[in-house]
Amino acid sequence: MCGIIGYVGDADETLSILLDGLSNLEYRGYDSAGVAVGGEGLRVEKRAGQLDTLESALADASFAGPVGIAHTRWSTHGPPTDANAHPHTDETGQVAVVHNGIVENYRELRDELEADGVTFASETDTEVVPHLIARELRAGRDPEAAVRAATERLAGSYALAVVVAGTDAIFAVRHDSPLVLGVGEGESFVASDVPAFLERTRDVVYLDDDEFVRLDDSGWTVTDADGAVVEKDVRTVEWEAEQTGKSGYAHYMLKEIHEQPVSLRQCLSGRVDELDGRITVEELDDLGDPETVQFVACGTSYHAALYGAQLLRAAGVSSNAYYAHEYATAPAPVSGDDLVVGVTQSGETADTLSALREASRRGAETLALTNVVGSTAARESDHVLYIRAGPEIGVAATKTFSSQLVGLNLLTARLTDRGVERRRDLVDDLRGVPNAVQAVLDESEAAAVVDEYVDADAFFFLGRGLDYPVALEGALKFKEITYEHAEGFAAGELKHGPLALVTQDTPVFAVVTGDGDAARKTIGNVKEVEARDAPVVVVTDGVAEAGRYADHVLEVPEAGRRLAPLLANVQLQLVAYHMAARLDREIDKPRNLAKSVTVE
Image 1 (tube, rainbow, N blue to C red):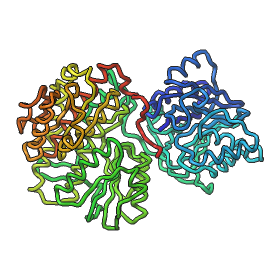
Image 2: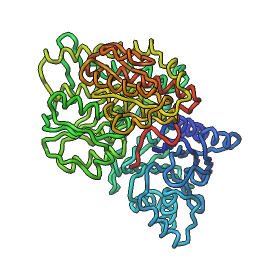
Image 3: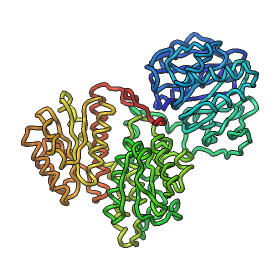
Image 4: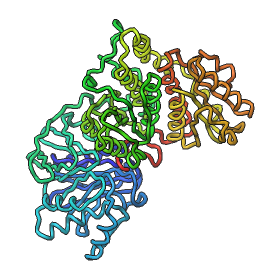
């Protein structure tokens, strides 16, 4: 979840490039930051707090050198302090290391090193690494061999970038944590994610597990665990650096909410033919016909997985959704006739990768539904379906969730091939969704509604059927960026206990789309909370006339049973955003969270 960037190139530009890279990686963690610039010696500066604290400390510094590494942290071992910030060094200051992941056997290694007389300066798991490398250097190994020998001792997940005084090179390695190279003109980069260096180059190399890279003034070389050279393809990232900016919006999150019509069109492009009513997903041409489908995911992606499982069950396919972190340790039974779908925005979610690997070990076919081309999930799975949402920088996922829901409709169509006529309604609904989302964005009254409830004690979100995952997602988005207590419930569950918490200071947001049995029963649950004097906000397409029972109504266009919940979700995104803005929260950098969760 931390962010790493390393640079080899112009000595006078190293520091500014590292700081720019950290700024582009703050969505991965922002409780402390640091840099190490190398050459004849190493200069290290690190500070607790957000990046501007480090920048202030470096305002008058003269950090020049041909190589450098930098880090922005999401804390795991030890609180955010100057000492716990990365880079970490050995006692002589000759080795500096930045790390994303968790060294699971750090306690054993720390005890061993302390027995050898090493004094530790931090509480982190990472600090064992520079001390191990320094010990190998003292034993006579060259820097590359020393880094290899040290990493062989590590258990857990890690992406590491290392600089050694007197060596104008960066040594990096990954195991269960993402790492990508940037290939520029006379300069090279290594980073946790492409945005770190996208302003300098769009040519990238994705590293696989246990691959080792050396970057120096002659370029870059990738080798495997045994030291054999690995030929890697250089890919060109399709999006431009400008796409990761705010484009005049106050926050990345608001920009990305408003990008949803475009991202949905990208997801549908070439896959939906309105003239003949066909849905074609060429990436899945070789996908079999599974007996059951299991979804594994976390957080927002888990809510998308719940939606996908319901779609498939309604179409007659046995399907369930599981939290990836539970599935990885207690997997559901699978066979070679089953499909396990990992839903992951980044394609690097550690829990989801573990679940997919476990499913593969047990003989299941695997598929990654992801946004990131070349991500680990995409490379390791048997199949991949890209949602094409474009770069998403805000920590709270918005446009990727909407694109996941559309992607899951495409997957359902592929797995339930019922012919052109049976699909025409779905094709019409899908083609109309981008314009319907734009209508919600243009006409939403969410900002005015939240002004009524700024001082509320807690917030409940209700839904049934396909509206239930959207209610869960609405509550998650709300709590992520407002820091207010919010809970999502299956509407029928409210009377089985949670109703005890409902008061006149507990606004209830009810998602009611369509006019089927689920909608009618949810209206009944709305009446139950209304009878307890709770204020009610109904998010609805108006088909079931649920607005008659509400204090406020947030309307969405009619979009069909499958896709109206997606439109309701856009209203709830705006509810969360405007409430957080009203409360003056750090919307793009919510406390304690990071964008890409690369630790288990």
